[in-house]
Length: 197
Image (cartoon, rainbow, N blue to C red; front, top):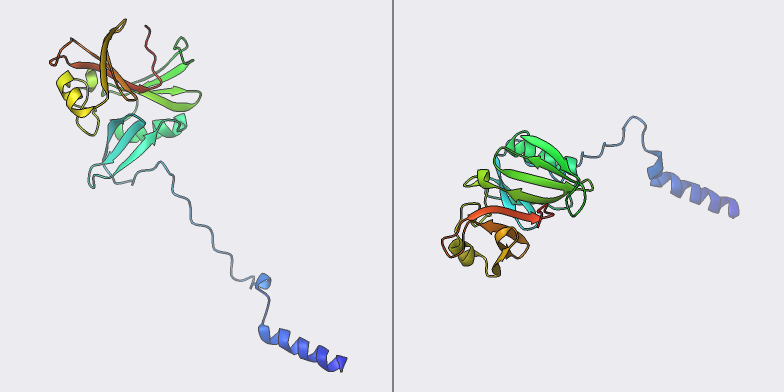
């Protein structure tokens, strides 16, 4: 009886076919699809860079879609992405005397500088050269008036400091050329800064 049962079990296993582990050697396993870099824009996409309190926002011009290049991304990745849109940096330098620690500055020809601390994207600044070239998504940038700041930032605070007429709006800071509604923005920054008070 045991012999008949053993034959029945052998027949049942044979009917089930080969185990999955014994796949035919003539069929190589499918290669995993390459992972798309999280920072990459579509190769053919034309893009622009917009200011953002949390980093820099990449705007695909054809579709209007955006992606945040957030503070904290590795230096090499952030520089690669920005250079792909803005062209090669005009200069790179390091200031060891910044309050936050030795800070690397990567300056582009449009008045925008990206700041890097401890190997990570940590801040940005925009100077007079950036006027009408680099702005927030709402159009505010260097050259905007204090009146425009008031209309676009509910948490705007303006005070006189050792730097001049300084303002803050959440995580964004900057300077105005004069007090009053007609005063114009001369400098903007967010994230890590290297200002000497």
